Length: 419
Image: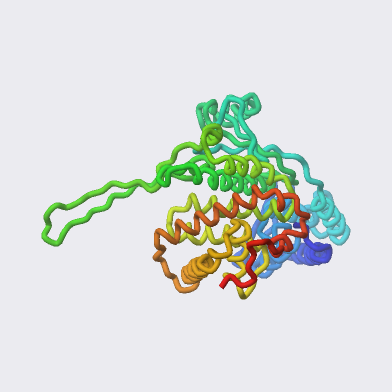
């Protein structure tokens, strides 16, 4: 997200003052807090006060201020500022200090141009675990998946061979992004990769056995967990030892996924891939909700799973909007998507209200006991709402600004007071 012009100009103005202070006689080396050096350009050391000002300037000029990956990385901006300072302070022909004002103006103008450099296309590849891919590969969302011996991936072999003997059978994902520098490109790609893995994990959990979940993930970033438990009675007899695994991972095979499953789920799976490229509230909410539900599926603790399923449900049904009557409105929107009958809504509200109170207790009071039936109910409710909204053709083509209105439209089963 680009900085406001005023922020950038303030940063550049402050940088000019900082450069002038750096060109003065050197401070005590014991007060040195930051030093940078580039071959052919010399080096600059900053004292504590100058270092503090430097990072204030870096904050003003950096574009990664909202937590989302920007087109220009903070690291690249840092390097540009250092080059600007070195070019201004060190004059190879006249020595330090000569025509300093002129050199500062030229260096800052060059920095201003560098900060405005246009984005370019990058192709980013990522090794992937727990995903089965055919020889032809397949595309889900914005990511193309293939094995290493696919023609598209052959160009990577010389680089990958420095770390691995062969990539011929390794699954890889490829995505195209736009960015100024390679660090920004990798950060943007990583966000898209993880979002895609999360959505795949959402569908993987629907069709997998609970203890055989395929956790599609970045290569070697997730492993199954093994633990031993010992139970010894007070009398010392018949000690019991058990070996258990927390999530055995099978690879998720999208081709197998298409065979013998609920047609509605298959429709949702196909539509989900298209949602990544659609810029509507409908698409954004669904992808975000599936992302959180996928994180819940891959979570290692019951408490995290419960909270993440609730986050998925809330992000689907509310977006950025909140209400004091949260449980009531949450219930009404769930009833609308799932087409709950009038006679079942009163009981349904009681259940959802209780589940929401449990979610609040987890967050605010540290409650950690999650009953099996509650976790299962929240999971099923989240899945059914996501699948139901994806497959509802009446909402799929609703204008971007009308999603909230659709939720509030009455139908023959609506109830203004679920209690």
